[in-house]
Image: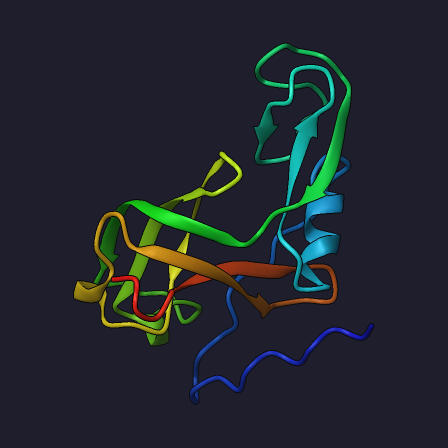
Length: 149
């Protein structure tokens, strides 16, 4: 599958910075290019975690595998950024930065997009969508699930 082209940017804007995958995170970022959200699963203790590590953060075993996540979660916390001087983020303002509890258990920091900031309330249900930012990664962003706010 070829990566999707990023959305056109406003004049003078720069794209979001792209992550640089390393040995532990490469499976996560490779999945994002296929519009899949994955988490690590420990086959020893059944713990699920993000982001990629070489050992389980619960039992310290090295029996980890990547599994598909549903892409659904709940807003645990959020803040709204109203100012950012960089050309990579200025056109995105106001920007909702949120902690999302995935249905599978892990909590991840992300952006909630596609809604007015005051619509993003604690406990709101969200689902993942991906913004392709490079040949090596797409950013998992979240949007409100219609009818659940």
